[in-house]
Amino acid sequence: MEYKRIHSALISVYDKEGLEPLVRLLSDLGIVIYSTGGTQEYIESLDISVVAVEQITGYPSILGGRVKTLHPKVFGGILAMRNADHLSQLSHFEIPLIDLVIVDLYPFEETVASNATEAEIIEKIDIGGISLIRAAAKNFQDVVIIPSKKYYPNLARIVASNAMTHLAERKELAHAAFTISSKYDNAIQHYFLSGQKKQLRYGENPHQKGWFEGDISEVFEILGGKELSYNNLVDVDAAIQLMSEFKEEAYSIAILKHTNVCGFASRASLIQAWIDALAGDPISAFGGVIISNQKIDLVTAIEIDKLFYEVLIAPAFEDEAQLLLEKKKNRILLQLKKYPENPLSNKSLLNGQLIQEKDSFDLKEENIKIVSIQQANANLISDLIMASKIAKHLKSNAITLVKNKQLIGMGCGQTSRVDACEQAIAKARKMGFDPEGSAMASEAFFPFPDCVELAAAAKISGVIQPGGSIQDSKSIEAADRSSIVMGLTGIRHFKH
Image (tube, rainbow, N blue to C red; front, side, top):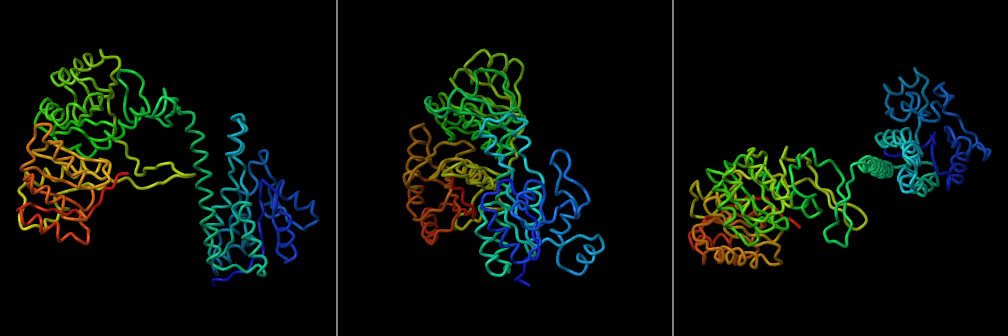
């Protein structure tokens, strides 16, 4: 049945404001009211009949009020489905059904904001109330949950309809309840994290304050150098996220500036990977963040030490290499312990947060659909995959050029994909590279064939993109006219 009538209610609220008219309405409708503690006393002060929860459980409120409603005879009545088996068990154990739960939680966030002592804050972590909310919301098929005084108007409308509730109303309130529960738990988590909140020298700019909240020691060990700044941490995160794509490559080094990759190469030796990564853009590399997927040896450390960089990250350092690199006190040395495995990313904006799954798609050869007449050899496929993985970590709109496992050009953060494409080709030539024979990647589809035409003019061998434009056929035709390989992945990688 989608419609259910409320016959009984359990009320446990911290803030009594606005409760009186609702309690009177419930009483006038003959609804049995259960309550405990201060809420029970408040209802009794209104000369309204109320059943003490202790009469159901046989236990008084104990531990200074920490335990009042946590009992099978309370939660059984809330969680029971209205079927023969559950109702039979309730009858056997003399548990009354509860059709409505009204809760207003202890003001945890307000207590934290009031600069209260830790003991006072801990006592404002609601246990019984949050459990009642979750239980009633879980059983929304039969139970109405009012998770805070904010939803009293919803209950007033329900009561006005002779206490009959529709399934859609109950489900909507359950959604509100879990939203409140999630926010409440998040506030508690942040409170405990605040003990790990470290003030930084400043934020993104010197006039902004900045903090880091968390335990970075789980991810890396700081071996030497000055304190990490806000911008350092942002760049370090971008570097680690990028290199997590190339953990299995032989020797890979990436150089980043303002979270964007400006140099990348995979080679048979670490020193060659460094030389070729730096060659991608030695100007931008100055003051950048460097990351290696392999132990830094002394030969490579000597060459890296010639460049001014902000941060160097690697899973390990040869002893002599570490001793050399530690001599530069303003350069930060980080030993990567593990690649972070948090499946979610978030961004604070407006008056809340955006939360999403991380873009963890791992492109493989089998994910690429070659739609051109021209087919790709193994080397070109390898370069297309690398170009696509790097483009995924650049600000949109983004284009990358990779040749023989070396990033030779990139364009990013452009409002036009054509601008990004022109920038990538021009950048390659400026750094002394010939785009001919390279692989081009775009993190999103081509709305028009213009980028493919630019690739053709530069004699680029292959292009990889998600596809999905209504004009894909025109881009494919442009590739075929110039014997360019066109691969589609079906996966877009916007990065805002």
